Image (cartoon, rainbow, N blue to C red; front, top):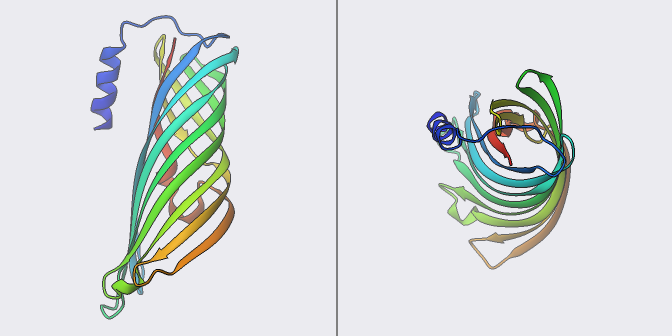
Length: 219
């Protein structure tokens, strides 16, 4: 599907020409993130899949240096199935919405190839649902609000003079803070909490979910 999407975009914007990221240039684009993994042991098997999309708008304040805003949505699902059928199977579903600011710096590597580094500051809202097949009364919901900062390097290839296709590694290094409200289905009990975390894209076996495929247009 990604290949088809890019083919359509290439056809649509093939008429554009002339690409340098000069001061005053406008940057328009988006990213598609994806990930999927499975692992198992003598005790349980786990599966995880995630995907997301983001849109961005920026302006070059200097040559090859861009500041802008971004909007995003992502969704993930994780299922843990115990090897012993007497134990409960659990699932976690998460939807996340983001709005943020970014700073991006391009460095030319070779003809039509660029390396870029991007710093992000993001506010996010998410809702999570934890379900249990047997002990349904233990199921609960979590709503989180918070923010974070991250660094995302990547490679950009200029397929046309005004169009770049990109491969990026989101959340190479990140720090985040969130406040949460937890509601249990079996009662009206509610819990409030706070969380601060620092990590990398290689944490928690979710490396693939941090890989992004995107495109940018320089106008």
